[in-house]
Image 1 (cartoon, rainbow, N blue to C red):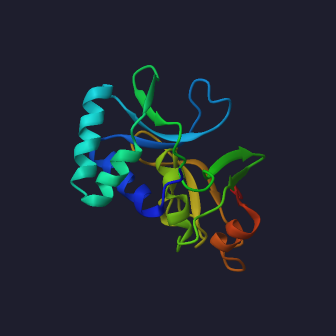
Image 2 (image 1 turned 135 degrees about the vertical axis):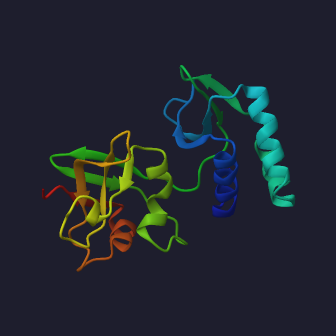
Amino acid sequence: MKLTQEQREMLQNAADNLDAQIREDYSGRGAFGKTCFGFVTDKSGFNFGLALARELVENGSDGENLLEELTGAQSDSMGRNYIYYFPKIQWEGPAMTYKVEDKKLIITGTPDDDCESLEEALETMISNSELDWIAPDECKDLTDAPILGFRDQDGEATGERWAYMDYQAKDPLEELREKGEIVFVAPW
Protein backbone atom coordinates (compact mmCIF):
# COMPACT_ATOMS: atom_id res chain seq x y z
CA MET A 1 0.00 0.00 0.00
CA LYS A 2 1.18 3.51 -0.77
CA LEU A 3 -0.03 6.39 1.34
CA THR A 4 -1.82 9.33 -0.25
CA GLN A 5 -0.80 12.95 0.36
CA GLU A 6 -3.77 13.37 2.74
CA GLN A 7 -2.79 10.27 4.73
CA ARG A 8 0.82 11.41 4.91
CA GLU A 9 -0.29 14.81 6.23
CA MET A 10 -2.48 13.10 8.83
CA LEU A 11 0.42 10.90 9.95
CA GLN A 12 2.83 13.86 9.98
CA ASN A 13 0.40 15.80 12.21
CA ALA A 14 0.09 12.78 14.51
CA ALA A 15 3.90 12.47 14.66
CA ASP A 16 4.25 16.17 15.49
CA ASN A 17 1.65 15.91 18.26
CA LEU A 18 3.38 12.83 19.70
CA ASP A 19 6.93 14.24 19.54
CA ALA A 20 7.87 11.56 17.01
CA GLN A 21 9.65 11.80 13.68
CA ILE A 22 8.55 10.13 10.49
CA ARG A 23 11.19 8.09 8.74
CA GLU A 24 10.08 7.35 5.20
CA ASP A 25 12.93 5.11 4.10
CA TYR A 26 13.44 2.58 6.89
CA SER A 27 14.66 -0.90 5.98
CA GLY A 28 13.94 -3.20 8.91
CA ARG A 29 15.26 -6.62 9.80
CA GLY A 30 14.84 -9.09 6.96
CA ALA A 31 13.67 -6.40 4.52
CA PHE A 32 16.65 -6.96 2.18
CA GLY A 33 16.79 -3.30 1.17
CA LYS A 34 13.04 -2.82 0.72
CA THR A 35 11.98 0.37 2.50
CA CYS A 36 8.86 1.43 4.34
CA PHE A 37 7.86 4.23 6.66
CA GLY A 38 8.00 4.33 10.43
CA PHE A 39 7.82 6.52 13.51
CA VAL A 40 10.95 7.21 15.57
CA THR A 41 10.07 7.89 19.20
CA ASP A 42 11.29 7.42 22.74
CA LYS A 43 7.93 5.95 23.84
CA SER A 44 7.38 2.25 24.41
CA GLY A 45 5.36 0.35 21.81
CA PHE A 46 2.15 -0.01 23.75
CA ASN A 47 2.04 3.64 24.85
CA PHE A 48 2.95 4.91 21.40
CA GLY A 49 0.39 2.64 19.71
CA LEU A 50 -2.40 3.90 21.97
CA ALA A 51 -1.42 7.53 21.47
CA LEU A 52 -1.24 7.09 17.69
CA ALA A 53 -4.65 5.38 17.63
CA ARG A 54 -6.16 8.25 19.63
CA GLU A 55 -4.62 10.85 17.30
CA LEU A 56 -5.97 9.12 14.18
CA VAL A 57 -9.46 8.43 15.55
CA GLU A 58 -9.77 12.11 16.47
CA ASN A 59 -9.30 12.85 12.74
CA GLY A 60 -12.62 11.15 11.92
CA SER A 61 -13.37 8.36 9.48
CA ASP A 62 -10.25 8.93 7.38
CA GLY A 63 -8.12 8.42 10.47
CA GLU A 64 -10.08 5.33 11.49
CA ASN A 65 -9.63 3.84 8.01
CA LEU A 66 -5.91 4.60 8.13
CA LEU A 67 -5.66 3.02 11.58
CA GLU A 68 -6.93 -0.26 10.13
CA GLU A 69 -4.12 -0.16 7.55
CA LEU A 70 -1.51 0.40 10.27
CA THR A 71 -2.01 -2.97 11.95
CA GLY A 72 1.03 -5.21 11.82
CA ALA A 73 3.62 -2.70 12.96
CA GLN A 74 7.06 -4.01 13.80
CA SER A 75 9.64 -2.35 15.99
CA ASP A 76 13.38 -2.11 16.40
CA SER A 77 15.45 -0.53 19.14
CA MET A 78 17.64 2.34 17.96
CA GLY A 79 19.59 2.76 21.18
CA ARG A 80 17.81 5.57 22.99
CA ASN A 81 14.80 5.47 20.68
CA TYR A 82 12.52 2.97 19.01
CA ILE A 83 11.20 2.81 15.48
CA TYR A 84 7.74 1.46 14.81
CA TYR A 85 7.58 0.60 11.14
CA PHE A 86 5.05 -0.81 8.71
CA PRO A 87 6.64 -3.19 6.16
CA LYS A 88 3.57 -3.30 3.92
CA ILE A 89 3.12 0.48 3.68
CA GLN A 90 5.28 2.79 1.59
CA TRP A 91 5.44 6.52 1.85
CA GLU A 92 4.07 7.52 -1.55
CA GLY A 93 6.79 8.03 -4.12
CA PRO A 94 10.53 7.69 -3.59
CA ALA A 95 12.03 9.45 -0.61
CA MET A 96 13.91 12.66 -1.23
CA THR A 97 17.55 12.17 -0.31
CA TYR A 98 20.70 14.26 -0.35
CA LYS A 99 24.43 13.83 -0.38
CA VAL A 100 27.32 16.25 -0.10
CA GLU A 101 30.01 15.78 -2.71
CA ASP A 102 32.79 18.10 -3.91
CA LYS A 103 31.28 21.31 -2.44
CA LYS A 104 27.87 20.34 -3.86
CA LEU A 105 24.64 19.39 -2.15
CA ILE A 106 22.87 16.97 -4.49
CA ILE A 107 19.19 16.32 -3.82
CA THR A 108 17.49 13.41 -5.57
CA GLY A 109 13.93 12.13 -5.68
CA THR A 110 10.61 12.80 -7.32
CA PRO A 111 8.32 15.39 -5.73
CA ASP A 112 4.59 14.78 -5.58
CA ASP A 113 2.54 16.24 -8.42
CA ASP A 114 0.60 18.45 -6.00
CA CYS A 115 3.72 20.11 -4.51
CA GLU A 116 3.61 23.80 -5.24
CA SER A 117 7.06 24.83 -4.01
CA LEU A 118 10.55 23.48 -3.49
CA GLU A 119 10.11 24.05 0.25
CA GLU A 120 7.03 21.80 0.25
CA ALA A 121 8.79 19.12 -1.84
CA LEU A 122 11.76 18.98 0.55
CA GLU A 123 9.79 19.42 3.80
CA THR A 124 10.01 15.81 5.02
CA MET A 125 13.64 15.36 3.98
CA ILE A 126 14.62 18.52 5.85
CA SER A 127 12.57 17.68 8.95
CA ASN A 128 14.31 14.28 9.13
CA SER A 129 17.84 15.63 8.63
CA GLU A 130 20.19 18.27 9.94
CA LEU A 131 19.60 20.48 6.88
CA ASP A 132 17.63 23.69 7.16
CA TRP A 133 16.69 26.65 5.01
CA ILE A 134 19.05 29.56 5.62
CA ALA A 135 17.93 33.13 4.92
CA PRO A 136 20.61 35.08 3.01
CA ASP A 137 20.64 37.84 5.65
CA GLU A 138 21.47 35.27 8.37
CA CYS A 139 24.88 34.75 6.84
CA LYS A 140 25.23 38.10 5.08
CA ASP A 141 25.08 36.55 1.62
CA LEU A 142 24.27 38.91 -1.21
CA THR A 143 21.88 36.66 -3.09
CA ASP A 144 18.21 35.79 -3.32
CA ALA A 145 19.05 32.18 -4.17
CA PRO A 146 17.47 29.45 -2.05
CA ILE A 147 20.09 28.37 0.50
CA LEU A 148 20.27 25.12 2.47
CA GLY A 149 22.77 24.56 5.24
CA PHE A 150 23.44 23.32 8.73
CA ARG A 151 22.81 25.01 12.06
CA ASP A 152 24.69 24.63 15.32
CA GLN A 153 22.99 23.66 18.60
CA ASP A 154 22.11 27.33 19.21
CA GLY A 155 20.24 27.49 15.90
CA GLU A 156 22.85 29.67 14.21
CA ALA A 157 23.79 29.01 10.59
CA THR A 158 27.21 27.38 10.40
CA GLY A 159 29.65 27.98 7.58
CA GLU A 160 28.49 24.93 5.64
CA ARG A 161 25.78 26.00 3.21
CA TRP A 162 24.82 25.61 -0.43
CA ALA A 163 22.78 27.76 -2.82
CA TYR A 164 20.71 26.95 -5.88
CA MET A 165 22.51 29.42 -8.12
CA ASP A 166 20.37 28.91 -11.25
CA TYR A 167 17.28 30.27 -9.45
CA GLN A 168 16.84 33.18 -11.90
CA ALA A 169 17.00 30.98 -14.99
CA LYS A 170 15.33 27.78 -13.81
CA ASP A 171 12.56 26.77 -11.44
CA PRO A 172 14.25 24.35 -9.00
CA LEU A 173 11.03 22.39 -8.45
CA GLU A 174 10.56 21.88 -12.20
CA GLU A 175 14.19 20.83 -12.57
CA LEU A 176 13.74 18.31 -9.75
CA ARG A 177 10.63 16.94 -11.48
CA GLU A 178 12.32 16.71 -14.88
CA LYS A 179 15.76 15.38 -13.88
CA GLY A 180 15.04 13.74 -10.52
CA GLU A 181 17.87 15.76 -9.01
CA ILE A 182 18.93 19.33 -8.29
CA VAL A 183 22.33 20.64 -7.28
CA PHE A 184 23.04 23.34 -4.75
CA VAL A 185 26.64 24.61 -4.77
CA ALA A 186 28.89 26.14 -2.12
CA PRO A 187 30.27 29.24 -3.84
CA TRP A 188 31.62 30.65 -0.60
